[in-house]
Length: 285
Image (cartoon, rainbow, N blue to C red; front, side, top):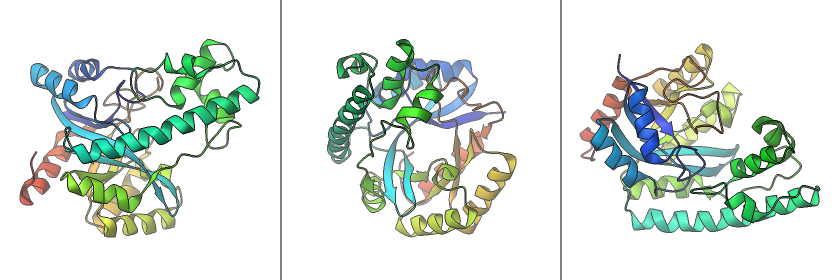
């Protein structure tokens, strides 16, 4: 059966595979299509699209936006973004400037905690957008932690000693931005937004009113029960079902491309449904 993966990352953000390597890995895994959805950047899309044409793997151009909402930070995946949109690039430049400030603040906190870590060392770990996974890699290399989970649980994550909040764009800004490029906005990993079904239902309804068009029904950490709940939300709010592994490469070794933690399977018909939706509205695929 034809499998796809509509949520992946490359070295253009915090993944460990270059866009070309990612497409090659998708081909080797037997996937017929992937979406490259790097955090707050489209820099890897031209390379991925070219590699897709050469290998026969369909590549959907995308991105992933970190967004502030009433219940906390949520992630919106935009599919079929314009890789050359000047407006998107300007916003991503602003986001990148905020990210630099945040990274410097986190490194400063780590230094105050007694860790011998410099921004130069962290930058040396990043081929694209620099973030906390690159800090975790330095900490691991220097023996300060035993694994990435320890780095995030104790220091870099939301409850960690060196955590510094991110200044994200609002949900309204995100939907307006994606609308200008005719992208299809998808709520990523909904249960990371809230594990409370009532709160999740309410937030999905609110986002639908803002312009949300799809939701990740199929995701690496979803149980059968969770998948069923999100399917119900998709039906209730007339949202397109989507799905992906959130593959990052070696920084998340338990998550395999197209397979997640082992039980993920996203059928090509999911992509076909999205294409039919877009075509019915005169949008490019």
